[in-house]
Amino acid sequence: MASGIISVGLRLEGFHFLSWVLLAVCVVAFVVLLALTVWRFASYRAAVTEDFMDPRRAFGFFTFVAGTNVLGVRLGLEGLHWLTGLLLVVSGCTWLVLGYVVPWTAVLGREERPVVITANGTWFIWVVASQSVAAAAATLEPVVTSGRRELAVLAVMSWSVGVMLYGAAGLLVTLRLMLYPFGPEDLTPPYWVSMGALAITVLAGARIVEMADAPMVHVTRDLIAGLAVVFWAFATWLIPVLVVAGWWRHVVRKVPLRYEATLWSIVFPLGMYAVAGIYLGRSDHLPVVAMIGRAELWVALAAWAVVLVAMLRHVSRTVVRA
Image 1 (cartoon, rainbow, N blue to C red):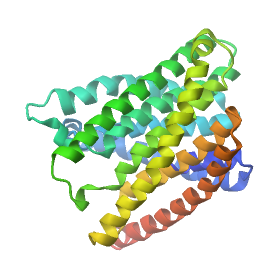
Image 2: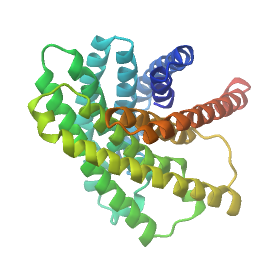
Image 3: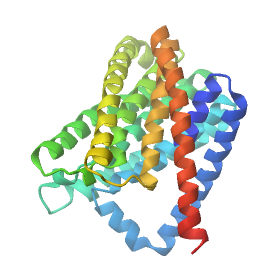
């Protein structure tokens, strides 16, 4: 997800070689993660089932939907729209299934109460998945000759669902922070997804605004364009909050800063915020927003490089040497 969205941003800004490098990383990572997931499901099915039942981890399954669509959107920029469509079919079906299964198995079907005590930043990944479906559908709609109305309905519907889900997830996570003990060890990197979910909502909204005219788009275009600006403003406001929270966790409360896989959930929101700003600036003619997005793109690329080096060192120490 992180490599794919930064590759999109670099492609939009004309840095084709860097974009292709990150696209290659994205493709390799996607294949490896897909193979490992299938292997884990086949060999450790009980552990997978346990993840589905745990509200602290279950929403992480939606990363498959988001990652698939980010790759599909990036391939669409290369003119491979048939691959974008194929990946959208896979991710869209998965989104529908997980959208009913995960909330029931992990939240509503649990006997333990209150469940809100388990709410965390990963719950926003459901929002990211919904908006990724909207972004992929909006990418395809202007370039296809048939199915345009259906894609418009899918884009607007999944975007609207994502907006509602963000409100629900935001309320539940806020209640978790206010009603129950919360220490620095609980402030994990996935809380950055709260900003990333807003950013991909902005991106999907900007893509819908750019879609070819269709009945569903014609009715909602002005509303989505206005809300996209509102969501971008709130995402911008959240960034200093999240930075200060990280300072409090690692500097004030002395939680060691070491590599963990969830650090990528910081890189992805940074990249998504950059691409969202670039797209929103172009579609709504907001040059200041586009300028901020371009500057943020290099911040995201720097964060990607730092986390990649940390990951390679971690793998070298824990896997290769072992």
